[in-house]
Amino acid sequence: MVAHIRGPMVWIALIVFVLGTATQILQFFWLSRKTARSFAVFDPDRENRVGKLSLHQRISDMAHYFRKTVFVTYPLTMTVSTVFHVCLILLPLFVLGHNELIALSLGHRLPSFPERLSDGLTLVVLLCCSYFFIRRVVLARMRAISSLADYLVLALVGVSFLSGYLAYHQIFDYQSTITIHMLSGELMLMAIPFTKMTHMTFFFFNRFMVIHEHTLGRGERVW
Amino acid sequence: MKVNTSEIVALLNAEKPKMKLWLKVCAHCSLCAESCFLYTVKDRDPRYMPSYKVIHSIGTLYRKKRRISHQDLETIGDIVWNRCVLCTRCYCPFGIDIPAMITLGRKICRTQNIYRRYDEK
Image 1 (tube, rainbow over the protein chains, first blue to last red):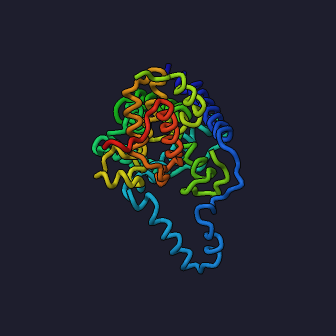
Image 2 (cartoon, rainbow over the protein chains, first blue to last red):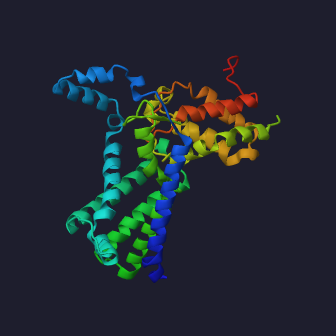
Image 3 (cartoon, helix red, strand yellow):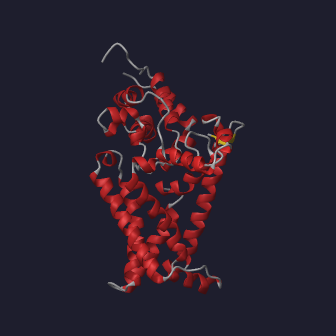
């Protein structure tokens, strides 16, 4: 059982994640189409106006834009969310233990974070998870839309990072914690394209490629 | 009152891939709340939050499909006609087209004779 989780399951999880995500991306292009309209439709004068601005005025223009974003409406949640998501993606890629395994398996390694940094960032992720959990339980507007799936997804992320932390420090039985760590990590990878975690993929496509008022990129497509 | 479920299912199927995708992408984060002016003027009642409106209208329709009752449609009608004015100002961090979802809800309600009523409170 453990040998399976440590061996073939890793590859199965990776294949499911890659194929699932690729299908989602194809679905996006199938459901949307390119348009001749541009993002400028929401601020026709912007390009002309920004082109003539001095550096100081450009910064002021950006500050003005920033003041209208959700970072100002919910500063704490957005800060926690940004830190959480950056760590969630970077930490598994640059943690030393993972890179040792990649080196053993493929012969090549990615650069690694210092162990103390990885350790600290793991605690940061766990604190962020706690924040999201408390927010979901305490706020009425969160309770009104929360379902079991929301708690399960959060628990899956929390368990994979917590078990990694416990395994690294060899708290409790190492064999059990590392098995839980591998299993929860694999489940998380496989679940990304098929659950609410799919927002990982669609955030980039929806916000950068689809034309709407809050487009971050060029916005050349419509649904 | 009789519900024509075939008509509803046909409309739901026509938009299914896009709508189901948007329902799945919604992370239930509630960051859309403050972008709805009705939410702010109604003492921040969660029932006026854009994500709540979508989950409890289009979400319910896709979940129940043929099992949808007239009572369910009345509730959905109240959401899509009375709790949203389709001002299209709602913000979603994942770029979900919330107004398009509410529009589908209205379209379905219209087929079942559930409209915005101006002659009652």
